[in-house]
Image (cartoon, rainbow, N blue to C red):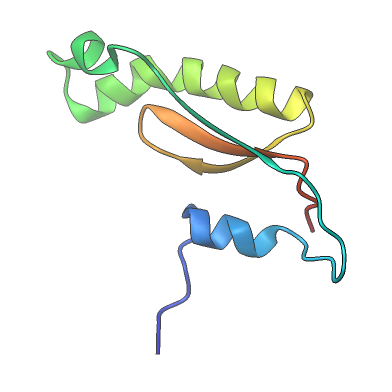
Length: 88
């Protein structure tokens, strides 16, 4: 038996997407990350690195939500979002 997915994994997020029997809808998947983030945080410890990246990640998530999307995963220095998928 498989363990239930963690709440922050793509598999868990896809379970939150509502399946509507008989309906086919186009869905857009956005995968976005910060260019050169490794260079920006290379000299920092983990907490300081995330402290530097977190404000930008929060702005990315807010922009997705303002545009009608749903962020389904965080990838350290990026996000994965869905547009057009009904959610529960």
